[in-house]
Length: 155
Image (cartoon, rainbow, N blue to C red):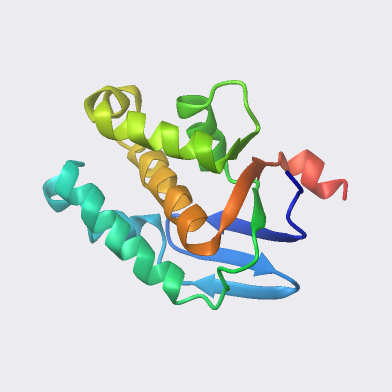
């Protein structure tokens, strides 16, 4: 499989999201906290909350003019991404679409297990995970790589 020519650099924060693609920078002043508060009623992450979360994320992704057609790679230095990797994909620094979908299905089947593994603040790593899945689906992202801040600064 060939590596996509296009790379999205992204950061998903509690209060805002930012994406960079082909020299264009997009910032959205709705973050993981916005998604959580608009999908999790009474702080509960149940099936309905996950469905609502997907809907809210889709609305956000559709507001950014990134075309689906061309396959893309993505890179992030986010600490929450590192937490997602350690929770769902231990000892890995990148994930592909099939791996992510498999991990997402495991999350849905064993939601209580994953909720027990994260602290109350760690719920944002689960929201982040759902966002990654939707980003892969809506923007044709084939793989996502974690890059440490030290590595990113050396380029």
